[in-house]
Structure formats: structure tokens, C-alpha cells
Image 1: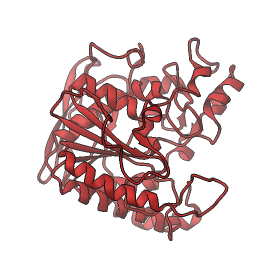
Image 2: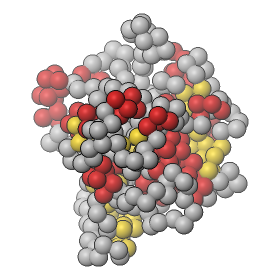
Image 3: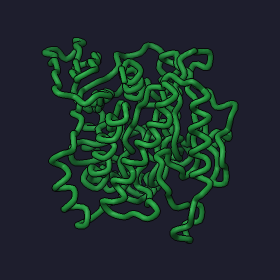
Image 4: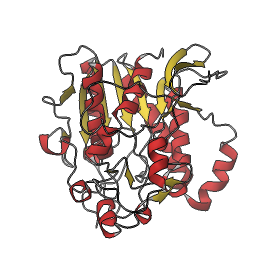
Length: 374
């Protein structure tokens, strides 16, 4: 949510000192065995934000002169150098194409999108409001026989990303362990409960207890990598405006330090862009000849000041950082339908089909994080 004029003065002064991780084009080469959802003949976007775990002194990139050749991009830092394979295709081709759509494309499963939910909603792995501990068994996905363990933890926005991690795990032989709870961010901040939306400022102590138990559970897993897709739109108890933004960064840092003490590498993924507030499938159904009203402007959808806080906090606490905004938006607009898939199943959560479609970007981020040297 916008922090308004209260935030503007603080951000103007702070932005001079904040190190923003540059955007680097990064995408996996095509994988032969892709799922039905991810194998759509659409050009996948190539934009991935990558942060090294050290304080960078310079960033050097190589540029490809061929649209089909594979080059490498090197991030130079004081203690870390990471080489990232890059396919130099049209940047965000599927998103750019979607931004100019008029009618709903033929074959788009609009009616089904409302019910296109993550499997975690049905198998008990995404625990409910009253839970105070993670589900301990049965939440392993991807390649469940692999010795490479990738834990993914967070709230319902994280659970909605499940399909992408599942597909990435299968394709790359990673075991994916999902540790999620409804309405509970993994950043160490006190948030309000949303179980009853008619009761404002209701406490949510179950979240604090679950988070502490989740950190211990994740530590005991001896994971190779822990991934934190972050929702930062929730209110923070005792803070507002710029203070709440800063508290998200501090809370994330505390959680990263606690989990990082286990020896696991860390990956932070920024939140998905906001919708315009409408239920997206219902909006698309109501505007079949012009779906533009169902999208959102990037200036409203992407909370730059909050992503900047994550981009600063993550590398400061030895985590790779990825901003996924360009997987959803052009420079000005975030479409409601991309690659013949409705992006959101309601006013906030990804459809499972779109999440699975984005598995190559998630896989690339995981690969970079696993190769990091914190």
C-alpha cells in the first residue's frame, strides 16, 4: 500500500544511500521435459534481479550480439563472483505482448482460473490461522529422492508460488520442502490477524509462535537453500508509513540471521505486483472484449519503496535477492492475462497455472543462490 506524503520525504533522503541491486537478464535454456502449463509456446521473460551476498564494488556485464547465442554475465563483488548464463532474447516478450491485448485470447481458461489453486491448499501443508507449528511430514515435492534440499517458507502468497517450485525441483533434481502458514510472514515482525476481516487490529500471536517453530524446524532440516518469497503489504503492529517499511527490513534481517546460522544459503524473492483490487477472473469474464481494465498500472502495482528495503536487507544478511516485478509487468502496465493464462485467481494470489509457467525464472534464481558464496 502507498505510504503517501508521509513516506515521500523519508524516501527522498534515504534513496541516495540505498544500494539498489541492478537488473540482469537471466533465463534458463529451454528444458526438454516441461509440464503442460510451462510448455506453452510463448516467449518467457528473461529479466531476473540478482544480488550477491557481499557488498558489491562494481558490476560488469557481458552483452550478446546474437538473439540465439548463450553468453554469461559476471557480477563482480568484494568477495563473491557469480557467472550467470543468459539467453539474449527479447526482454519480457510475453508480458509486452500481453500488455497490448484487447479481447480475451482464445483458449484462455477464464472460468477455471477462480479455482486454479495451489495443491498446498488441499494437502494440509499450508497450515491455517490457528496453527502454531509447521506440518512436519508429507510436504516434500519436486524430486523427493534428491539430496539437495530447498525449503520455501512464508504465507499464502508463497503457497501460491508452489507450482513453480515444484516444477523447478522436478526439472533440476531438487527436493522442495514447503513450510507455509496462512497470513503469516516469515519476517520477524508482529502483524495483525486477517482471519476475521471485520475486526481491525486483531492480534495474531499464533503467527509469532509458528514463525519461531518454523525457524527451528527449518534448521533441523539442514537445507542447502531456504527461499523467502516476501509479502510486505501487511500492517506492522506499532508502526506506520516509513517506520513500517524499515521494520520489514529489520524483521527480515532477523529471520535471515536465524536461519542462516544453520549454514543454509538464502534467497529472498520480492512480492508479486498488486492487482487493481478486483477479483481478476471475474473482471476478465465481465470484460471479454477489452481486458485492459483488469490489469494495473505498474506505478500502483509495484511497491518500489518496500522492494528497495528488501533489496538492501537481503545482501546485508548474506542472501541473494530477486525482484520478480518484470515477470508480471512492462515498464508501465501489469496485464491480467499473460501467455493465455489468467495471472491471479482472486484479487491477490497467483493461479497455479501461471506460477507453474514461471518455473524457469524461479529455477534460475535458485541456481544462482545455490552457487553463491556467502
